[in-house]
Image 1 (cartoon, rainbow, N blue to C red):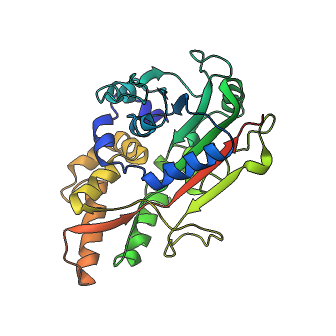
Image 2: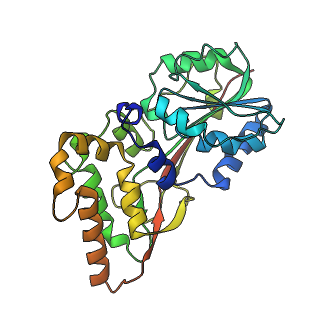
Length: 298
């Protein structure tokens, strides 16, 4: 998470290009929460970034907190005020996930973490969640991976995989171990253990049939889909912590006459798409995603 916490990380660009989480995801979380007897008082979004997920939960909860260790992210989040169900405002706090001193014991109904749990300290974070979460409370960790091109350009996803995940690409600049955790669909995230209902734990993978890297049994259809112009695809790539780290290590890359590393990739993708007879400006994007659900015992 060091790149996101850096003062020179562009939180505004992150807010502009990162995908939003679909209603279907939250309905799955809320249904799970309700089925276990969860209440609708307080929601805490850990690693909230620019506040996107925290703001989404305001329609269901009386009190919402967004928590992030990055001053830049919290500053950006506070620029978009949002009222909760009870008419209050989302409260943003600069803090790591394992130090929630501002919350009382047993005071939280739902804890979410949107594309951030890969950076948490375990078991310390579970210890703190165990302290603040109410009986029957829910924990929902979810994260998308590197996006894929949807039909008819799925054959080009090997270029994106090479760019993002090979030693010759950005892999040496990825924030580890977070990068590997996300791209293993959060499987390395440990279960909470003591005080939680092991039988209620769920690990859901939303992955398309043309995902190039691995065969996944028991997958669910992708639920993050959108269209974006090629310029937006480049903007999305630039929000990656790997790209941020690469640019700091290679400032000369910005002067490349062919454009920087992200511009060169998008030029390649666009050229290959045109060879396939695709000349549209808008492309279909899909984000594979994982959702982990845990319930605190009574």
